[in-house]
Each structure stands twice: as structure tokens, then as C-alpha cells.
Length: 288
Image 1 (tube, rainbow, N blue to C red):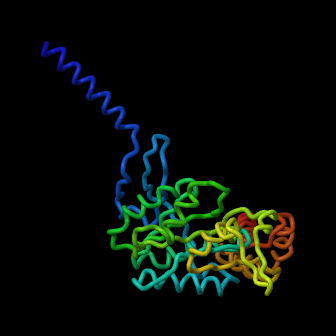
Image 2 (cartoon, helix red, strand yellow; image 1 turned 120 degrees about the vertical axis):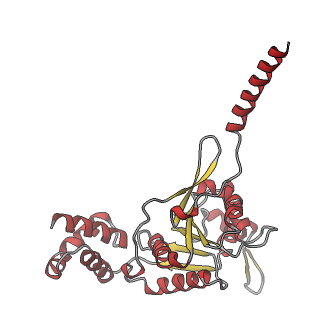
Image 3 (tube, one colour; image 1 turned 60 degrees about the vertical axis):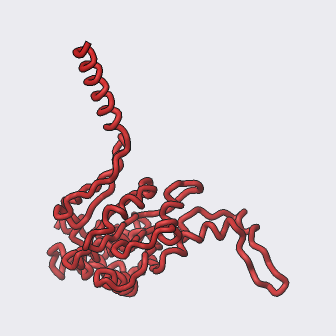
């Protein structure tokens, strides 16, 4: 009888262990000495983990040209943050390939020595932001939670999670965490012509947005600092091309000769952006 009972208990323990293995587990703290940047990943089992980024992009602030105004704002806000002063969550919006993400990576490299760290979170995992904040809240480092290419469709759960973390949760803001997000869309949600009918007009000409419009702009308004990026002129594009070619070891004479090819490269891609300039420079330097 005792033998049967022991076998039954053993099988029950095995069953419990299997069930526990597929249940969501609390987010654990990683070994923070492994990297200065981390990615939050959700496994198929539902477990969330913070994975170290083994090879962090070597972007430097000096590498970024023709965005001096934007660079000054982001660098100032980040420096205030790492120094323990008040700073804002940041929304970087505008034309694609103009340096939004690169500027954040460059700030990480510039201030990692002063304790700055970065955690990249995909839009689909924003519902787990409270868990991530809890894990880092007692750490001495300063953490930027980075959401790249952020935009939402109506009804996505991550929208309200991010909105709550930014400003609206009953919990106080954690002083060692800021949100930096990039987007091509300033208000982060799609806008439709039909929504203009929700505006109301008073007799004196004052305009009041309707509830639908108010909801769509409420998230972006919770970012304390907005930084806009714009398409580059031809001269600005060529300046960026020259900078990247020089950093890749191309001599000055060859850089000047590359200008016509750089313009054709941009024309074929329909964009004069920093990303296109970098891609051309890598191609040209490799062929040279």
C-alpha cells in the first residue's frame, strides 16, 4: 500500500512540475555585468527574459551629422538623467532613416560609463512594462526603455500599457527609468478623415476636438520631450555620405569623386536619408 502511495505521489509531483514549467514565471533579474544593452523577449511558453546584447552598435554622437538641433536636445535630456536630475520621456518622430534610433544608440555609448543602460522592448511586449520596471527599480544604473518604430492600431493592448507607465498609473514614476520611443507617426495611432466630424465649433470660432481625437493624441502628449526629424537636403545628404566614407577610410579624392554615384544611389531608393548615405558608403568603400 505504501509503495503504491509513493508511486502516486511521485507521478503527482512530476505532473505539478510539468504544469509549473508552462505557467508564466515572474521576470528574473539577469547578470547586469554582461552588457550595457538588453532585449526583452517573450518565449512561446509565456516566460519573459532579459537577454544581453552581445555586440552593441558602435555608433558615436560625432558620427551623426546634420541633426545638431535634435542631437543637442536628446543629449541634454540624457545627461540630466544619468546625473540624477529631472528629465523627460522622449518621442522622436519624423522621416525614416534620419537618425532617430542611431541617436539613442549613440547616447548609450556616450554615457554607459556613467551608468546608462538600455532595454529594447518590442511593441507586442509593452504589456509587460510594469514587470520590467519592477526588476530595475532598485538598481543603481539608469535605464532607457527603448521602443523602436512605434505605432499602434486601434485596440492594441500595448497602447494602454505604455500610456499608463508614462503618466497615469497609481504607482509613482521610477526615477531610474525613462522611455525613449521612435516613430514615423507623431500621434502613434492611425487618423481618419471621418474623425474630423467629431470636432465642435463654438460661435466665437473656438474649436474643440472630440473624444476620439483626444484619445489618439493623449499618448504622444505624455512624452515630455518631442523631437522632430526632417528629410535631408541634397547638400546635407552629401555631407553625411562624405562623413561615412571618411570614417571607412576612403581618401578625400575618392570621396569627392563619389558624389555623383551617391546622388544616383539616393535617386534609385527614392530617399536622401542618413541610412541611405550609410548604405552607399559601405558599398562604395567595399568596391574601392
